Length: 128
Image 1 (cartoon, rainbow, N blue to C red):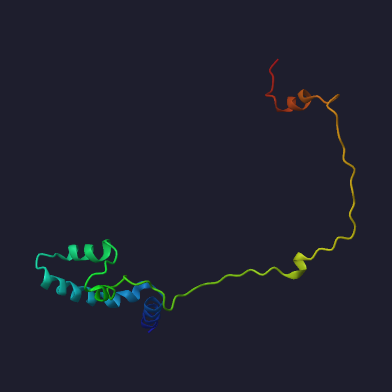
Image 2 (image 1 turned 180 degrees about the vertical axis):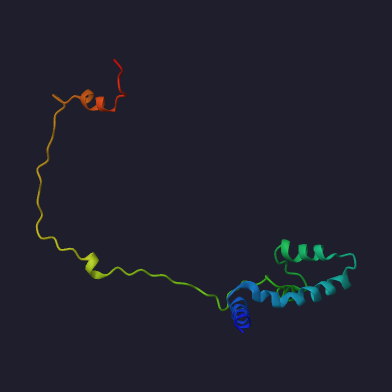
């Protein structure tokens, strides 16, 4: 019973929210191929698929019939969208400044400052 229910719910999901619903149109492909086969007996099924799927959608005499084929029209109805919005709470954005403290800027002159002293830390060890 669980297996039947799981298959049932999976099929409901696949045929309502994914592109699997286009598989219902598969018999139309073979019917439309037979219509083209009557007009051109030398047409193979691969050539038929090449005409209808590899070269866009040319506006020919059977354009309306071509648009009934699977995966030819955009899937827009019953499109499932997931919207994710983050709201920042007010208590995180409001910060009260109680006092502004100015710190004195300290300027050092280069006299008495040795670059070699600090760079000697990064020297490789010397063997005596």
